[in-house]
Image (cartoon, rainbow, N blue to C red; front, side, top):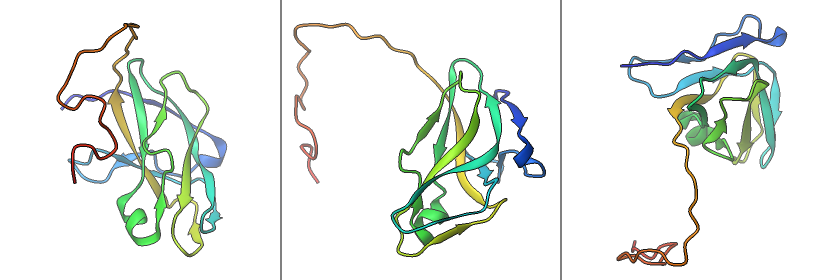
Length: 147
């Protein structure tokens, strides 16, 4: 399976933490860990530091996705899922987490907090027109195709 190289710069507060890694041979997402201790209250949000910055190759993005176990067991999610890290961003990677659960959620430095998925980017342009082609669905949206 082809792969891309993403250059990773460890920041001082990320010393000793693992780089994002695949937990299994066929995993789509790389686990990323927290570089800080933080408690997120119910309904609260926090941009959790990871302790690294990276250089994503042009033509790719890295998507930030929730961990399914945290979502199911604790209601912890990524509110802008999937979040996008653009190829030209060079600052620290932070993971925005939201606590949709009913109890405070404690994150310790080194805890797995999200998944990172490298994905190709298809650039697009818009062509303004006066009419669009007809389809069977037409302008129907938000449940218009049935239950």
